[in-house]
Image (cartoon, rainbow, N blue to C red; front, top):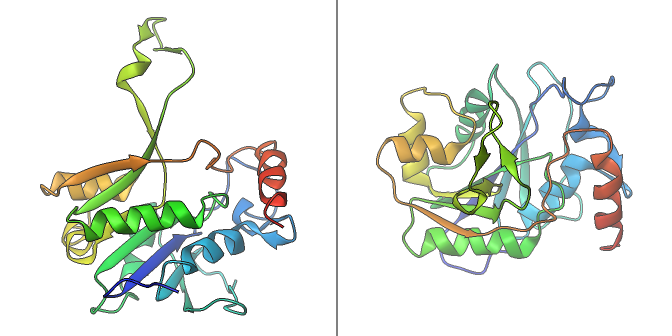
Length: 219
């Protein structure tokens, strides 16, 4: 249960079609280590949240049970883009919420500790807090030029926001690949926090093997 003053809600974005992944079932609803990918993500989010909004694919009747969790869970259909889906979820977050996290369901290994770190950064005054990790591979651009990886960071979720800043950023109806980009575009204060190298995003079928091993250690 959340222990700090005020309310925190998390939007878990599970509205993707999983076209890059392939198969008949979207990756976020596949079972890993005894639970669906989305259920692992919701469980971690619930550890710091007063409520969780799960955004499922447009037109879907998929539900996410709240059994065993200490907060309420609301499911809502998403939109035609990630940003639109986040807005659908944000509309379900109570006006009294002070902190809102946005987390991709396809990152089921994100820890409760990371969730708490992001919330704390927002409560300390940031408009947005994003977890990042350093890039460890050598990077070349399409012309074969080496890019200085010391100047690069990989951005993860959960991303945390003051509820006001997130609502203001989405008011224009703009689109971006993540919500911190929208907050930055309207002048919000962005801070970074250490991410987790094992907080991988399930993108390819082989990712399931890695995630299953990591989650299996928690059982």
